[in-house]
View 1: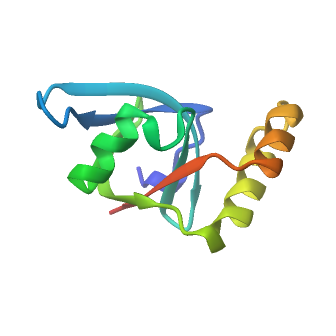
View 2: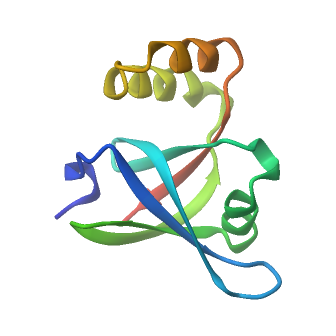
Length: 114
């Protein structure tokens, strides 16, 4: 299965602790746009998993259908409107959250999944 065929509501992001090296797993909402994975960090740049991913330069995405690794960076500002549109389409049952994100976008991580 390719990452762009992943149609679940959530997935798990796996990183490793910056100091301990211990596996750190969080469940996130996500979208995939042109084989790029995007997820929002609820705690912005203070999010532990996000800090782990950015320091390592990579993260792993897991679902019941498979596991993928990719280079992790912050989504570029010019990507944010398209990312928000993709989240709005996928999570349309949560319009108040998406509206709040449009007013004050969260920090999005981007991973290029091979």
